[in-house]
Image 1 (cartoon, helix red, strand yellow):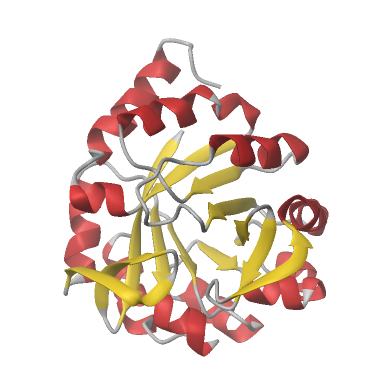
Image 2 (cartoon, rainbow, N blue to C red):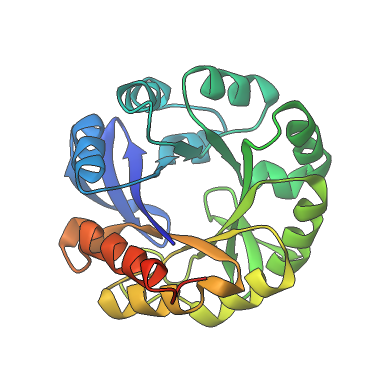
Length: 250
């Protein structure tokens, strides 16, 4: 189980939003590269970056910061989402040292595009499924579609994506606990790995996610909890590693 720190980028700063609302922003650092350094020093084995401006603009906005982080930590895989809507953007990110590109809105709007990406960039494409009450949300969570999260996940499993990042937007940034049931249901219906996101709050959530790793949940993204100190990243990863070492993990 990987615990993956989130670095959400808005106007060049590291921030957190509540339920994806840009007007409800808390700035945690004006140096995202230094923030990434802190998480790497605490044992992060992957970094989750989100270009929040890009998600709303439909194109990269914080690309320079993202490239700086990828170049600074070449041995730590970086996954990036937000505003990735064309092949050229994916290619530019991968050339800059990013390992995985997360496609969200564009995946819902143009499923064929995902198949093209998976063929051109195998093992580098992740689909981000943001859902509310089981239905997919798009446009930076501003719109809720009529597509179910499970249906979309199955569709993109067939297309060849490497993993699904599943976010319960009703809980994201709200410190209300991860939606274990919905995440397990999704993971159990597909064979590709699922990364849980949204609502991770405390050590109880760490233990709860680790307990269901065998369902196909390979990691969990930590956001507001690590910035406000209710989860310690290093401690969470040590806990997961200890379960694996003792034969209690997946």
